[in-house]
Amino acid sequence: MKVLKFGGTSVGSAQRMREVAELIHAPHLQRRIVVLSAMSGTTNALVEIATLLYAADATAATARLEALRQRYHEVARELLPGAGLAESAIETLNQHFDAVLALTSAPLSADGERVILAQGELLSTLLVHRYVTQVLGRPAVLLPALNFMRLDVDEEPDAAYIREHLAATLAPYANQQLFITQGYICRSAQGHIDNLKRGGSDYSASLIGAAVEAEEIQIWTDIDGLHNNDPRIVQGTYPIRELSFDEAAELAYFGAKILHPSSVLPARQHGIPVRLLNTMQPEAPGTLISAKTGSEAIKAVAAKDGITAINVKSSRMLLAHGFLRSLFEIFERYRTSIDMITTSEVAVSLTIDDATRLPQILEELRRFGTVEVDENQTIICLVGSLGQDAHGAANQAFAALRDIPMRMISYGGSPNNISILVHNNHKVSALQALNAGLFQR
Image 1 (cartoon, helix red, strand yellow):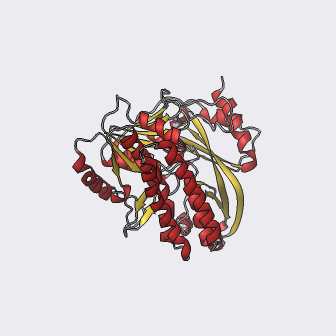
Image 2 (cartoon, one colour):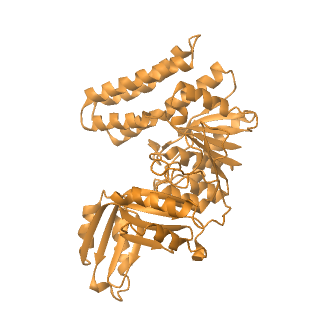
Image 3 (cartoon, rainbow, N blue to C red):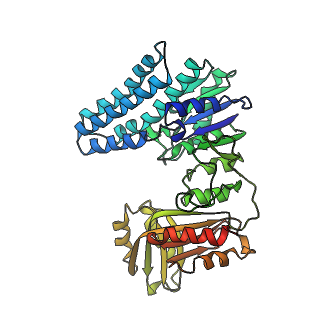
């Protein structure tokens, strides 16, 4: 069994859907589960509709919904020509849009918002499945992800439940080779419609791959693998052919947009290789993520924006057992993760990427001493095989950044990562300098 996930741009139009349909029927593929994202732009539109409803602007929300409905009608007519196929699909599409329309008549609840956000994947899988079975005449089974994807009471994927219920969902189709299902959407522990957050279709694919003990998980996007630097900012980047699970997890967490940060963990736990491929260039080798670790000191650079740095200075820190525990407990209470941390005799500097509860956190931190906050920061993450740094990679990186003001450095906590904090204004210069200093020979 293989699991193939296709992102929003890969199913972003009728033509792209036709191309995906051919890819998933390539003759060399064996039994497979295809996981689809929503058509590109759909989730953003649904978020906008929910935001308008929260603002009690039902008129604007309805207008936005009807514009989205018309877009899907056009795609259906282009994708499913003749013999009433488009009309049948449009009738089913309208059931989804009417369900959202019904939510515009009353104040929107959190459950209602999740119902709205779930529609994109339901619509894309409906269209692709209809095209494969009714136009191409090929057998395929549409698996409702809401039948087997579930979160536990801690809002984490319930792996045991997913494995058991996916097996039960697949059981009646022992002779079928192709299955199509939704990424991103799931149910809560209480059975309500929920989701795995933005970009969660990658996570869905990895969880499904782990549940069926897949031979390989493929993530198909619009770029030929994970690049050594941000191709939107730096010229002359290139795809990395192989990464270890740990290296890929670091890059995903610290800003590599091609891969969801959580998606590597289930694959790593079960030793399932993950291959990143390009829908527009299916012949390209892409990037293979596995347990294998290469010898390159620094393989890639990524950047994570929206970082807030907090410095806590207190003379009471000196020889104060339990100080750091008390500090961390504050962030734990407010469910706010720490990305970087450095310490000295009298101060602790750390970073967070979610400032939602920052005022409450700062109020408690001020009990310890003086607190300073620097917003609009960026973490530059250098990833590779850096254990003991036998290659002197850190020296090369810092030499490349000699003209860039650095706010913090975290090095040694991971054998795969050097993290450097800079102001947002220096992000582009830092990425370009690192590219010139590390990758251009």
